[in-house]
Image (cartoon, rainbow over all chains, first blue to last red):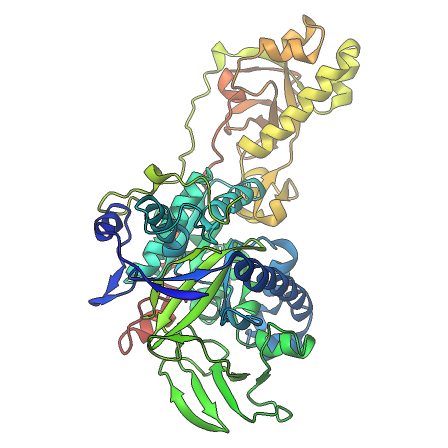
Amino acid sequence: MQRHKMSPRPDWQQQAREFGFHFHTIDGDLYWDESVAWQFSLAQVENDLEDPTAELQQMCLAAVDDIVQSEEWLTKFAIPSFAFDLVKESWQRQRFSLYGRMDFSYHGHGPAKLLEYNADTPTSLYEAGFFQWLWLEQQIERGALPPNADQFNSLQEKLINQFAAFRKKFAGHGLHMCCSPDTVEDRGTVQYLQDCALQAGLTNKFLYVDDIGQSKEGLFTDNDDEVIEACFKLYPWEFMLREPAAVDLASANVWWLEPLWKSVLSNKAILPYLWQKHEGHPNLLPSYFADDKTASLSGEYVRKPIFSREGANIDWLKDGEVVTSSTGPYGEEGSIVQQAHPLPVVDGQHMLIGAWIVGDEPAGLTIREDASAITQDTSRFVPHFIVD
Amino acid sequence: MTKRSQNVNLAAMRKPVVFPLSALAAAVALSGCGSSGEEAYLYNSVSECVAEHPDSADICQQAYEEAQLAALDSGPRYANQNLCETEFGAGQCQPQAGGSFWTPFVAGYLVGEIIDEVGDYAEYKLKKRSGYYSSTPVFLSTKSGRPAYYGMNEQKLGNFGDKTVRASSSAYQRQAPKVRTASTVSRGGFGTTVRSSSSSSSSRSWGG
């Protein structure tokens, strides 16, 4: 595993425009950064990242199967009690899921350590699945990378296949797709998924989360009063479950992507759960609920709210003292602590690996870099390639 | 075998400046013009059909299966039990695809009168228009006051008790599943978390 300085494709910005990649630069800061790239060996990708991702996914599915049966666990996971049955039902009836991303700290040797699982609303999908793919093809074409260079990135193909599988199962007349207004990145991610769905023959219709309507029968509707039967939402379950329209979740009977049971996995509480069930697993870090009096917390630990995203509200603790922290709006529902496992640092940049899962299969990598030890939504996306 | 996607459709990934919003497939509106229709037998079960056509049992059976398939793919569907029962009556509907939508029970199916002229199902199917189902389901409803049979496109095909009906080719036509509407009483019930927090902190993404 090695970081290389690369010459960017001279026309990459023009191509980004052509292909609708509108968030490569955000507030004047570069987000898509192809002036560097990470190299992996095939063995590093397959043995250290792909296989553990598949194994962890199976562990996570077994965890959901256990947790949805237990009110005690669901309470610890801060799922509102009105939704217990809904979560369980979604697991029993609509096990189908589209995608997720596990974030790892990995140094090129030794086991990759799972930091968290973005199982509900992962982003950086378009740049990973498409724009990174295009980068590799074109860097090979211009001779900047050898002809046998490869990339762990079957995202787009797998997403299209997964939408095709959904189309067969759902047998419905179309999928609604939504996200919050005023975020170019989320809109771009949903647009990418719309494109993938359409290429799978699945017609779809976009609306903003805020425009979802409620009918007197307790159905959800779109702006044309069409009943929403199936809906992809790039909007977190932990928000939705606490919003007014949640009262109609049962009667509306929407087939959600991601399904409601993902609220169990996209939840930092899964980390202490997994550690409790698989203590000592090479890809897991010791993790505990913050109020767990039996936890031994010597050395460096990271405290994370059960619900937080994009690296917000994280405290880095050394022997109980906060040494670094990030701000943000989360933390009301309790926290977990996880043994610190510093990210690799090259040229002052911390490097985080996101491993994609489509359905239940590993599907590719996202690499992010940040000057801070806690990567955030401003972390730059850096492409990768495989050359042995 | 590479580790990356093999088939990426670059043309499909190019974008105009503005994001296009693709529309849901609209239901094909068809008018059933009864007089030009073809005569068909209406059977409530396979055994009823076989009883009248003992030499054509395979046509009876396969036409029944085709009608079931047609009902699921092109027949009426509703977002929930209530909406379906409003149209077809209490106890007349069943959940499909794990309850993601509801359909009325198939009350019977139409078999073309050519069943009297042909030997087997292959020949029967050949004589039907290509691109159309070779048999079509009927659904029973009292929505017009008295019990009557309705086709996939909700056109009335005959009254309860009818043994033969006239059905135009549109009654056999494959169609996009129907878009269901409901009157919206409020909007904005989702998204409140972000609306209430965006005044103080702005986020680039609510994903992660």
